Image 1 (tube, rainbow, N blue to C red):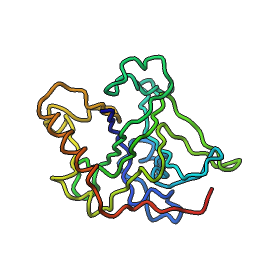
Image 2 (image 1 turned 90 degrees about the vertical axis):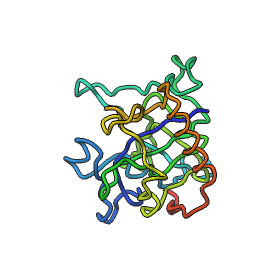
Image 3 (image 1 turned 30 degrees about the vertical axis):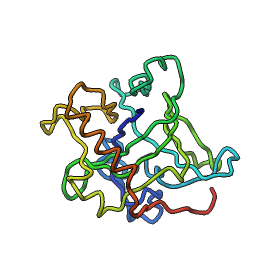
Image 4 (image 1 turned 90 degrees about the horizontal axis):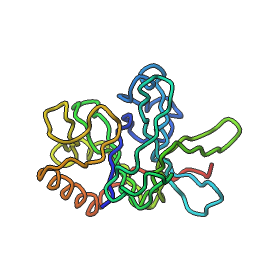
Length: 212
């Protein structure tokens, strides 16, 4: 199946931090310096491009290694997309958003988009002259789930591996993990996680605001 993991800043609700009580954490230098992050709206449904349904626009930062150039996402590295090296996007991807837990310090699943479209380059959605949302994944809000903090804190269920912590697979230095390592234990991990996602029937913290 097509699955990809994105590392983003930790927030409780991802509704834009409009009241200053849900500041992004652990999102890299930009978040540390500004207390802000483009992923702050990742789980805020919006109406855009004259579509009748609500959508979630997801952002993860593609790291720049020279400090200036914005790197593309290598969508051809997503499982089943080897022939997409000339395409601008790929459809029907399970995008799993992950963040460092502020209390327990491990990386955990915070939510996901099913049947998402993932883009090679950042896209822009303008909601007014001075309000723009950058995104590199989009999905119908009805296909998106934001886990409550109490659920994200269940390490045995939702922990995401990092190679720096001794795992043979998982996130490295990049904010994207394609889960492409050849390891039987990885197959077991992915099968279990996808089953948990498919069977999840708990609380969803996504709130539908007034249309922007």
